[in-house]
Image (cartoon, rainbow, N blue to C red):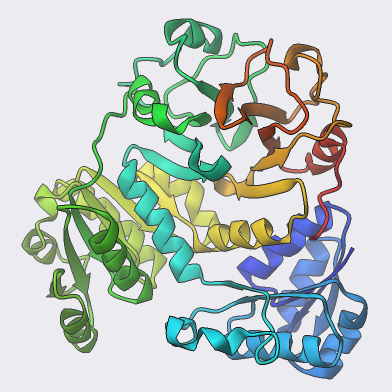
Length: 459
């Protein structure tokens, strides 16, 4: 499969790495020789140096033979023109663009993206995706990662195991016996930066483990309680940063959360005035989120959740830590730099939102074809959770999971059959047509392909 990616930044590089691992022919175009050199040294992809919207650069990248163009440069305009050029000159079948400016995304101008005008098949808005991710965190404050699967019938959740957890040091087999009617399956345990996939049932969870589990969505609160997290949905939120993400999050809370008080701390006075005019039901405070007096003025000492989404990773991390020290029950920090992510949790921040990972997840959802319906990379990009349809030819179908010879690095978490959620157990038998939620550690995609008898191709 021939794919051209415009942009070799964090998102472009991550997508290139994923798609290259799946044996696609990937070429990346970027104006920076340094970015291209770094990427081609690390990943099996081709590189072209130049402006990604220029026809000669796209031609050199082979877009004329490509089935998919993914435009994720730092410029909305370059992304949009790259899609236009690929469509008009090279007839590229499918084009995906990352667009950040909300001016381009105003529903009033939706006709702009019609096939005869600006031919973009799928638009990815990082700000909207991040806002949605933070919104999920507010609904399940005790989790560091939350994702709806199977049209909302299942929940994928990541939780940190603490000393207070009632199931600490309890074997997973015993956990099932303790809660026999709780439809929950532990997919993976991340310990010391490595993935542990339960296989025998004798594995136990330890303090500091980051645990990913799948459960029936109606059992989510009971599942969280079993891990020692019974925090209610947030009713008071303080947002540090009144940029696009902060503003969008405030609107999201106002529209979808009842009786939730919201305050925004914004550093720049002009932006604070604009927010005050546009967000009538949100308190706006002009000040520095690293100022303890400003935090107290915003009521952080009494708030349930503090969310820091400024454009500076260091400010987000430090303000989240300061908010916790001030009295906030939960703190969420937006972190762009991948190297910071493993450190943040150890410092006391409850959840990390990584825009690059969220954007990659959104793009992968669009580029998978056919039987693969959803993709969600787990924290630190150590693996993916896939939602897939079980075909009659799949090696999983017709035999119990205990006898299915599932390769190491892969785990089945749950099954959706006729609208009913079935927790994956050793005696679970998957039938053709079932929707299956599967965890695959990084580098195990080819084994998943064999297991499902379906190539993870594009469209």
